[in-house]
Structures are given as structure tokens and as C-alpha cells.
Image (cartoon, rainbow, N blue to C red; front, side, top):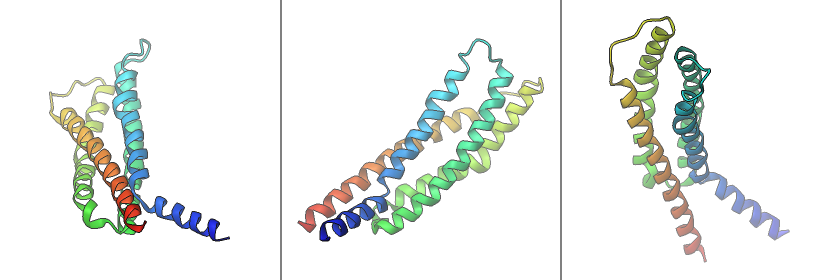
Length: 160
């Protein structure tokens, strides 16, 4: 049975590595932010107010899922034993998530509600700021994911 024990230990080590979560989070966010959000405005029968209302609900749900992913990421980084190497990226993602959750999403949601009610709000940088923070978060998730994979590979090399 030593084969099964070693396989289980290897699986546990891989699950503790934050790379998998970074890539799942990246895919989830990219799918919504880069694909679903712009494509819904191309639907010929979907009015702008309805598209904005749907977008508001979708991005609120995405934000909640991302907050859960952030908590899991911080736990996995701690459990991986590589917190020192990954901490700067985690802090940057925390700052981005705070800016999006506390400032940008509520502001964009309010703007969407105004448009849905027939009021056109004054121009704002909120949408551009959200897009920039979203792209930065996606880049950070890729960097953290690949860095985590490299750390895992380096650890395996030293054990041989």
C-alpha cells in the first residue's frame, strides 16, 4: 500500500498549491468580464437598460464568488508553505478586490440603476477604472498561478 499513500500525499501537495485556484479564478473572471459582458450588448433584442441590469446582477454574483476565491487563495498560499514568495501578488489582488468591491462595483451599479430608470448619468471614469483593475487582476492571477507551478516543480526537483 505504499503506492497509494504516496499518491495521496502527492495529491494533497498539489491541492495545497494555489496554482489550480489561480487558473480557475482566471477562467471564471475572464469568461464573464472579457466574453459575457461585451457580447450581451451585441444581442439585437436585448435593450441597453436590460443588458445593464443583467450585467449588474452578474457582476455582483461574480464579485461574491471572487471574494470566496480570494479567501481560498489566501488559505492555500498559507498552506503551501510559499507565502513569502507569493505574498506580494496576494496583497495586490486584495487591494484590487477592495477597490472593486467597495468603490467601483457600487458606483457602477448605481449608474446602471439610473440608466434603467431612464436617467443618463454624467460621464465617469468608473468603467475604465474597473476594466483596468480587472485586467491587472487577471494578469496577477496568471503570474501567481505560474509562479506557484514553478515553486511546485522546484520543490519536486530538490526532493529527487
